[in-house]
Length: 337
Image 1: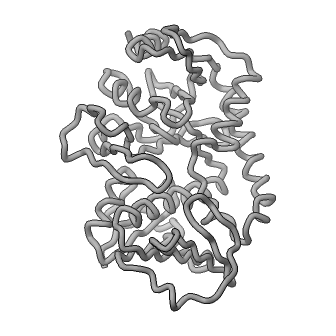
Image 2: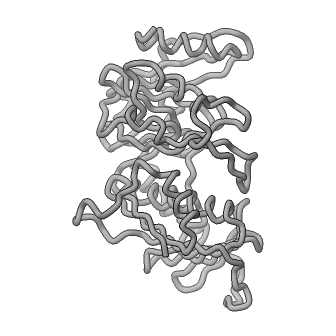
Image 3: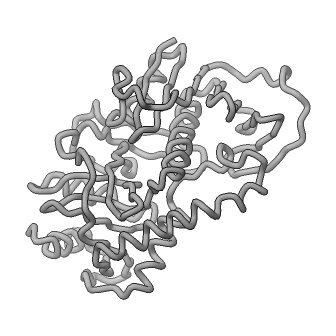
């Protein structure tokens, strides 16, 4: 078995597999969190993910009724275990008590995606318990203060991030889901950067790969290691919240935003978590009835969002069809032009 160990702000994850290449792909996704050896003996035992590139042995499974469905899979429950069937292409056996998940599938890209999503879901749930929450946004630090740009999926966060990271004075907090603590402080959560296939990422080919995905079109990924020296190393005080608003014309402007719309945007992108992968198949231990138990998590997210707004002014960022103009508007607002 080949393995890799990760430390996500105190949440330990271990990935093992007979396939060294598969483990290497997962390590590329989360390289900023990779640890060659445990660095903190106070960490809890790691959640273990075991990946096998072989067809699932469906004939050996118990006869169970389906508990619930997601667009990706069908879930079955049996005394603390969840059997997650990816429509005959792969099978994940999630054991909450043992803190482990074993995945079998013949398609390496599918098994890799399952591992990636499982890690995001597991880390997100455990950080939620500690009052540390993900927000769907681009987060950068400029002149010592954190700036969050809230945009929907496909809204151009990655493209904007790569341009900003080539400017002096900008550091990355997170391109997709930076973290927010209870008091509104931001924590780094840098992952691979995703751009549209065919888009020139401006980096060496060995740092770029294109992957197929279960629910969406293929995506080109840029290794975050390219920008390793431009990633924030610790907590960041929030300085500004920009709520993106698309415009069909060429208008580009940044203007103050009232508290109500600003809080509404944070409810959308942080409390509800639109655009943040949740992984219901890994979180709902007893099926959809568990949703009521997530109200405490929602309340904790809402409190953190309120603290964030108390510490950082909110603005509406009107983004027109002219990408260069949008970029210049942001630089001028931040004083980086």
